[in-house]
Image (cartoon, rainbow, N blue to C red; front, side, top):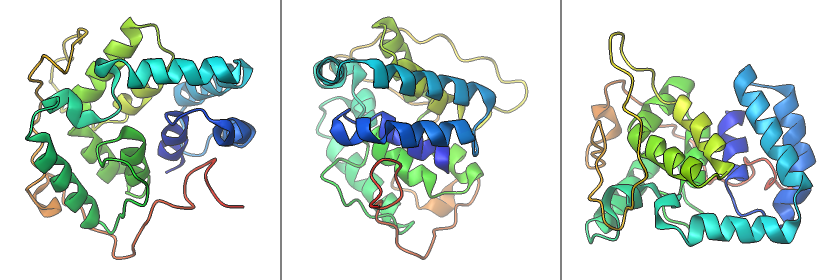
Length: 226
């Protein structure tokens, strides 16, 4: 799905290849394939702002935001477990979950890296993607709140992904507003809990692995080989 591919790229490091791809990304946003009006508006505004900023300032801001501030980490299990030793098994389980769908990680990145996770979701059917993201809903909500508290424009992108989570059942209360947290100090939790030891078929809505292998290459706007 184009939405997840676009957000995956925009959450990446804003090096020259990404900046050069901004016109292509902007065109995809304007085309609006699979995007609602709010998503088009937020993405178009983000792309325009990124294109207008000084490249050096943009790169420095990205490093400060995501590499220097733990509560802004794009590695989602960090918000759940921090640097705890149990994070290793959780990452292995997530990698195995991807493999059950034929998704292979070809970049040197951890499996809980949000842009990579969005690449994975882009290969799923809409309902499957929502179900997968719903497992990370509380983490996404917290990450968005932390970024918004810091005045980061990336909060808007996380908010769009959060909004794509599985819709709550009728009658469920609105989630409580998230407060800024420090994953290095907080134990973190997730509602509902994530159990990557369970096979995909154990999900509330059965997810059928795609038998054709997907390596993540050639499917991301701005990274595709022309």
